[in-house]
Amino acid sequence: MVAGLVAILVLIWAGPHWENASTQTALQEGTDNARVAFTRGSHRDDVLRLQGTPNTTTRSDALGREVWMYGLSSVQISTRDGRVTRWSNRDRSLKVR
Image (tube, rainbow, N blue to C red; front, side, top):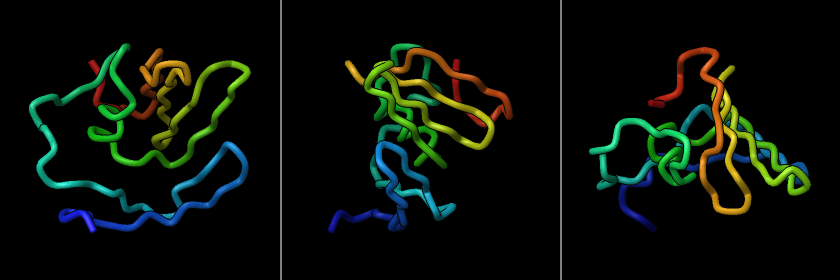
């Protein structure tokens, strides 16, 4: 098992939508902490590294996007290339620039 795994996530699967039933996130030691914010065009891995596991996700292949929710804030990610296309930082919880 990978050293540095902090928590195991309990996920509830319901089609293309899932919820993080735990408030814990899975983090790995040794990640690059030099980048402190993501922006449009950032890869989904950057969002996960900076924000942790989203509370909920919804995928729409017809629209070509996934929406990741962090509290009241959301991040929209293209299903084509895995890049951030937009976000809404309603509760100021996102590390964006």
